Length: 91
Image (cartoon, rainbow, N blue to C red; front, side, top):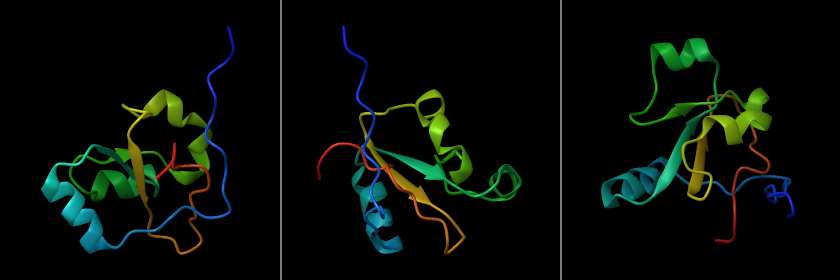
């Protein structure tokens, strides 16, 4: 039996706008919303339904995220926060 495949890292994850995210939410699309800033920031403010996974802990995603088969949308407040490897499957 072979091990599950991990998502391939990319140089930069695809980006969506706030408006596109709102539209996905309004349509009830299936995705996991990940809040990448610190736990302290998450505790003080985060989008409804978001899961906290600071970007420096991305290797722990399979332990934390509720649905690794769904599209994963990551948001971060840091311009240096790029989320390589977050998008799973093909778009």
